[in-house]
Image (tube, rainbow, N blue to C red; front, side, top):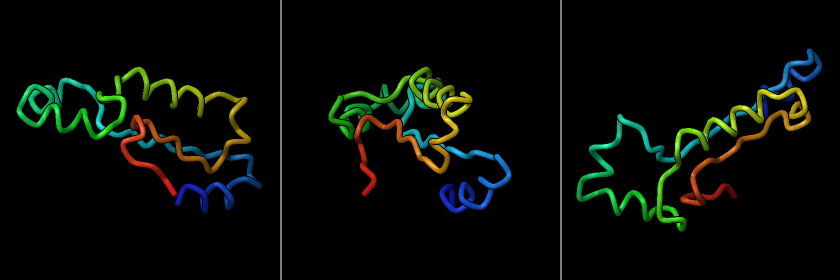
Length: 86
């Protein structure tokens, strides 16, 4: 959908990007990360951890910058290589 919308909206100077985070270390998931499942969740990434909120924010800041408009239609995965797009 992101790429289709980017193509459709480009003539109107509307640029579109999406951030697709994996598991993010927030208060909402503390109970999961501190449970028996915590290591399983962290080990989904070869980095052995989950994303920090500021790591997701950096991707959002990039897409919000005027200089990123030629990246229209992009999807930025912030998941520590826990899954890869093909």
